[in-house]
Image 1 (cartoon, one colour):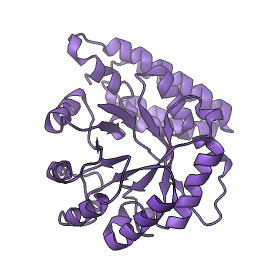
Image 2 (cartoon, one colour):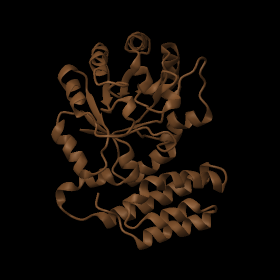
Image 3 (cartoon, helix red, strand yellow):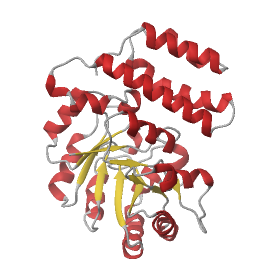
Length: 320
């Protein structure tokens, strides 16, 4: 079973991916946060860094495209192929953000299965690359999924990565595991699982439910505990590795902090990035609340560094 890092806007950028890859158990694929395809598309300098070998090195990076226009998809995919050497692109049909879905993109596109089918006809005919899809299971009703499975079953997908929630669910409630099971029964393409893997136990439950899944994609759970995949890989030895993970997390933090200072301008921009990460990571420590409050209130590097040093020095990593 392969392991993938999910695309998360504003979090899993090229700086994060490189630091993660060097500090923790490496992923088999890293998916970029979505890049919006537009008419006459030229990539911005920020987007170039997401897909360029110069910034990503040998990392197995898969560009993700957000659009509901087939011509724009094809043009953007060809830029990734012809200028940056990519062989696979991923279509975002999973983003539940209102600003995205209101335009009929991301998970919002799932509400128009006939239009989606025409879109897929065109991109599979004209792109000339491997195409994978990250999808939810519908917009408002579980019954949406049956029609979507008919659509997906018509194409030679590289992989279908399924987050078994509806658009209306956002990230609430229990994933709709039965709908993933339906895909297993009806589709012959490789299937990946995404959703609610926050612990080793949660991973083991997914392995037991879906032992033939081709991949697992880690999102919020791994951002919260970047050592999660290390813990999964070491689960059989019965040892307590929390001190090892604490040291790795400190190494990872320091690498990210240093790199953001190099690539971003000004204390404010660097601290914004680091504070966002700590909103995910801090609950992985004992008694974290007052430390997180100090981190979020810091306005200068010195205040921030003191708060982080206190957290690492005075608290422990919780069981993964």
